[in-house]
Image (cartoon, rainbow, N blue to C red; front, side, top):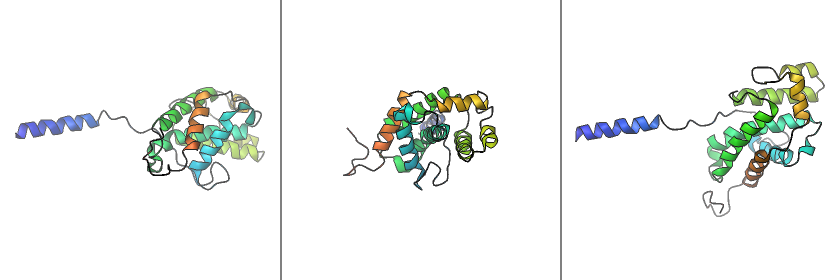
Length: 188
């Protein structure tokens, strides 16, 4: 009996090592993505707006950088924060896929920590908006960014339509409030 218990415990512990670690998640201050103090809701609204139509950020590297940062941030936040437990489980998965796709479009290293990606994009946007181009470009350096800073700005100025970013951000924005009736995330 004792051997069976020990064997079961060992097997359970071994199974714990196979669990997928949570996605890399950045932390941002209140107001990081604009007007609202709540960074999660602000990030969802910004990403939904920006990725619905590429014309919205065309020739606007500041809004594009903030939208890219929002998707990167949400790619971890929607999975790791208990606040979003009621969301349809596919939405955080879609947002992680959006993070990968948007990083590929902009030329962000796939293994770059989300904290650095988010911070550098928000630093770029803040400095660029204030007219401090040297400080803005300094934020877009290797190894996080795979292209020279000027090329990264050109990519931000001309973000293409990224279907999964549009879908993920639309779904996330639609699920900002818990469902009425407390159906535990069952949106079907």
